[in-house]
Image 1 (cartoon, rainbow, N blue to C red):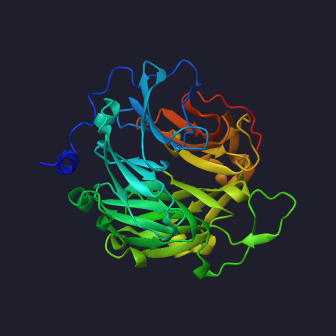
Image 2: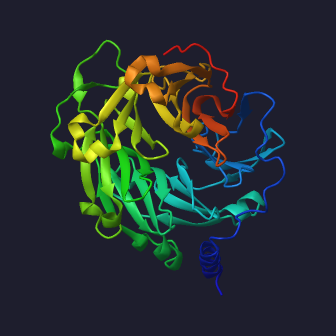
Image 3: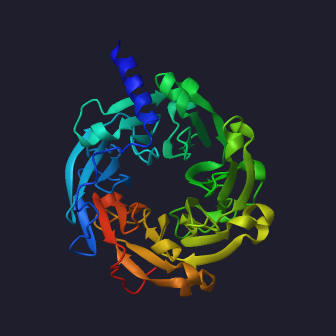
Length: 410
């Protein structure tokens, strides 16, 4: 048996064992609260995303390669007894950014620039050199897909990948990829989007997928309403608003090219989108509007002109967004990415989700952050928020039961 075939068989067996634990039984103290409500952990690279394992004992950190800052890696951080330590890094080909775990917790799927990477979680935490199961490469015009985000259906059968530079979302048959040795033939097709698609959020019943496009598709003929990002004196409108794009998931499994079922304006440079626990609200960061936008998801299709509930002014160039406290609070990262330096510390804005209609009045305070806070994830037990500070090379751990709020400074 060839090594390649053995790898594929291992992947198939792992996927078939969805009911089994991905790593050893949760070690005592993995989810213990840290001594301080906010802790910064230095990492050996610029962290894009920090993704906790299912049991909360590990944090996987994607660190794209940057000039003079080393090669691309996946960092492995251990959580135990209220402390977080950097255990190791694993070199990875490509440009790792957004990641998702399969629902059995066994496989880490990485949006990896021109490719997709599939990593065995158990081997990753055990320092095995063969942790990378394989890469899916795909020929692309210009060679620049710019894969940046990924999400997988609950049955672990279909993978959606935001191809930021190609203006598409790739739909991948995960069952086929396991039998094709990670061949591009497992790609079902492409969902057309506007410029720079990023977010990938499923409705609770997984019938719909919500994505964002920083600028609306040209086919919609929306007027130019947004200035160039980073511009200060020049306020000339050069781009249309960004969009929430709505995808029919079942249709996308067989006919991705015709699976878009709706588009709604979402401010200037719509980037991230998350849903409330019940799925009734969508929270979108409009980076070039310096705002958090709130939408009624029922109206996104039935009455798109009245779907927007609120616009909340936050800090400069917001990016990441997370819903915490069982949906009662929303936290936004203020990246200031177009003006800050690695020495500048930014903030996170905390919003009362029950008061969003009051706009700025919904803001309850701010939290400290490093430079260019980018992505956020909540641990599965809902107690801890993990933030990546991309420009200051740190991962931030926040105890959600002890938020040290300061007066907000948007």
